[in-house]
Image (cartoon, rainbow, N blue to C red):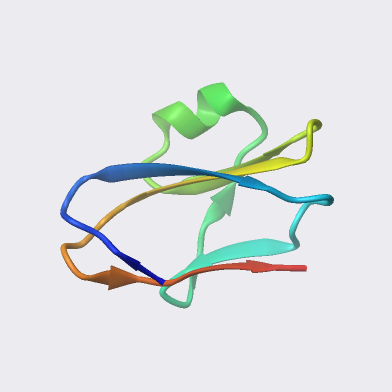
Amino acid sequence: ELSTPDKIYILKLNKSGAPSSVKLNGVELTRVSSLAELELAEAAWYFDPMSVVYAKFKGLGGRCKLVLEV
């Protein structure tokens, strides 16, 4: 759970395998197939071959809960 001012966030998380989904405050984010697509998206996530999950979203000025489901 994060306290997030109103701005864009890109989290980089080490993960040994790709999650089945990534949810922000209970809403599933769209999975994209490249970092370039992630940069263009408003909110999405990407898993790269080096075992890193990137999650991009806009903070809403309050608390955000990001969940990686396996």
